[in-house]
Length: 59
Image 1 (cartoon, rainbow, N blue to C red):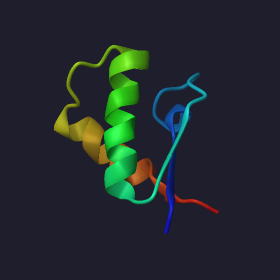
Image 2: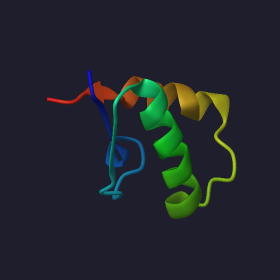
Image 3: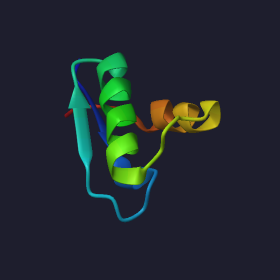
C-alpha cells in the first residue's frame, strides 16, 4: 500500500508531502528532503524513529 509522510508533522511550518510505494521509499525520499530543505546532513536514530512513526498509509 502506498505511504505518505507530511513533513509538517515533524517540522512545523514545512508543507512538504513525501509519498512512496512503501516505507523504505518514503524514508529515502524523506532523508533527501531533510538534507536539502532542513540542512540535516545525517539523520539521528531518534529522528528516524519519529519519521517512521509519522509515515501513514496513503488514502
